[in-house]
Length: 417
Length: 153
Image (cartoon, rainbow over all chains, first blue to last red; front, side, top):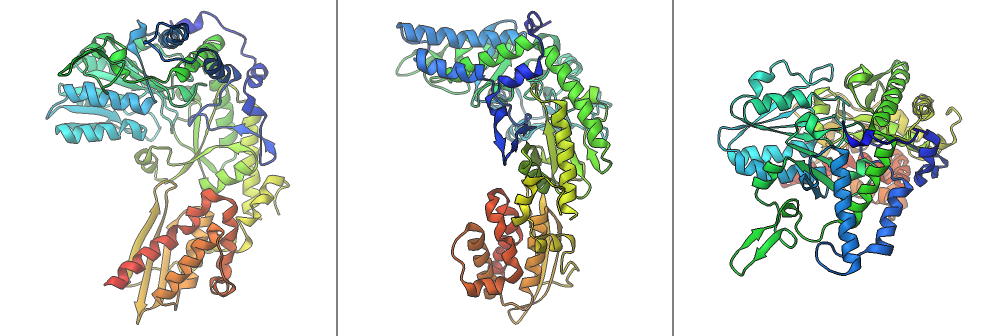
């Protein structure tokens, strides 16, 4: 059970919306309906305030000075790390490494742990529903090491096909790298089961949690995840900062990713020794302000309670899917059962191309994502080249789902004039 | 007309009647037999893809066939291209591509050039929607490159 469940404020949608200044913006003369949360979330004033407070009151470099500001900056930076650790139920704060984003977290593991532990003839298992950022680093590493890259398939029902998991994960499997929740299909994958399988053959599991940590309770110990990666900007936090969680012993044994200040313990003209965790992986002056603001984002979500966040999005997704499917000319990719998926609805209209729809919805103030969603092979496997995607968060309402459906109808009217 | 959503009328510059007509009934979609130029153009970011085939006789384009899929803008633009290039020399087509580029960037285009472009002028409204300019240019840029290569042969 994560700490986030310990204290909660009421899930009052109007009060939540009032915390997000951008929601009062007009787009093309219309009220903003922001439905591109899987790309990035909006920020509450508490997070924006944390950034300004830091720069106005605390700004200094961390881990170096003995002066008051440096001590305060260091305390804030480390407190934020502890907040993130508690949020995902990491056993100790040093297992939380600050990175730039999910992509950098994934690349860090590929370049250090995987580079040191994967050899010729070994295999890497990923899924067919990965984001490009959890495909390309493994393609590159497999080629470099003459290792094999294997895929767990995505079934037509949008669920991960685990029927042949026992032959795909075998004694040469060193790592399973899989998304917790698909950014296209919304599918929630059986991470704990995959962890058990790969641990049984002596390998590790990396979880791309970019789409899950912002939206549902995630407990790294319950999942038995060896590595887990996510970005702050998709969970109310600022851009430019992400997290790599790793099991302590694994991180401890790994070589550094980058070299420089802060990550060393002692430097001579000939050599250097590495600092302890987590600093071994945080070379150079870190992103102090954004780390502190990420702590603010985590506070905000923990106050709401991640069970409540999840519940809200489940209800909204079920409602929106029903409304969209009732239009009769729209195909929704991924699981049709809303309880098997998160708040991401990727859809294709029978006659209107996603880009024309995206432009027309934007004219009505509605922001959705269009295109291949950084998952080209997956999108193509559904025999489409592009799709539209609406994705929800804590501040979205049923009336915004209605606005989307109405906006699609208006667009149909426009193109059939 | 539109269903009364004020925002959508703002799109009329983008989706002019001529554009919608070419989108719904694209011209010259029949495949060309033993084409001299045969190219696929695509924009992986939006998934738009077109297959362009041309027959060139004495440096004049005698036959053209374009098939593919894409948004209204890229499809209409490809259809307008099919209409324009027939009977033109490769130099004339390349000059037209240059005019279109300038038209979409909001740069000067002479009256003479506009006359040559004809219906293609309808694409000018795309200027107000900068993210859609690449949709309008997709087939033109591909053809321009192909003609450049063809002339070298």
